[in-house]
Length: 288
Image 1 (cartoon, rainbow, N blue to C red):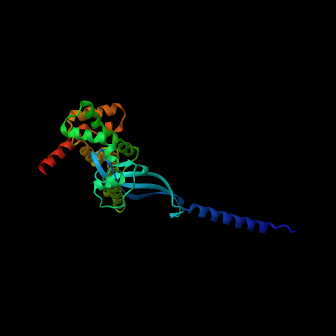
Image 2 (spheres, rainbow, N blue to C red):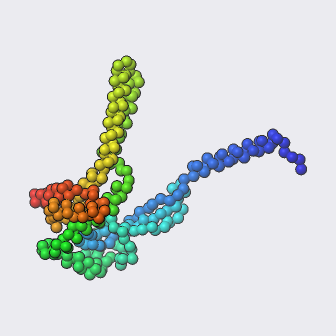
Image 3 (cartoon, rainbow, N blue to C red):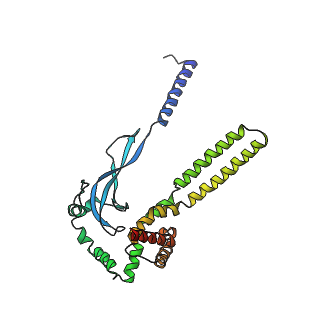
């Protein structure tokens, strides 16, 4: 068999190189992986420790689904379930095996919902319902009252931990960042079309404004958790603590205890701000 000439070998190597390059390019643009799908399954009745009573919950199933170019390759694997209180919107981990059934109807009242989905709910939480009655009657022991003050703060602690774990961009941070970039670019464009002292002034203004905007954006990022607590956690805590009507000193003592126990909510929630939120809530209810 005759051997290939040098030119033919070079041509073959060139073709092979071209095919490899095309293969690499195609591989770079293959979009695949998994995504999360949350599916609302129905409703169940449960006890909510924030609402302090039996409420309706939306039951949700979480799946990881493999995809190729975002086209599902399977029905997915169930990785968890959670239920969301329809009154306070707090999410709890859930197990479908706990419920007799999961109702799909949206119009079932809470008593009928409990009877259909969790018939043993009242029996299971009998002691807790008795404790709630003692709150209303004002017959709680000091230890029981303290435990009930601690409970919602511990329950909401994962939300504080998750918020602190990420760099978050709320409307204050986002607005400041966008305005800073827009004004910085506008001043640079204006300066580039100017001359002399005016140009120097505009360049200086652009850098000063950009620096101030960056510092303000950093400030908003650093104080995000305080705004999150006021916006998301105070309404839930007010709902949970309203029947207990705690004093500011009680809140300070409980939050101090949690802080010493290295519970992050004890560090990030301020007693004075929480007490003021409770006072505003009580004032609003009185006026209403």
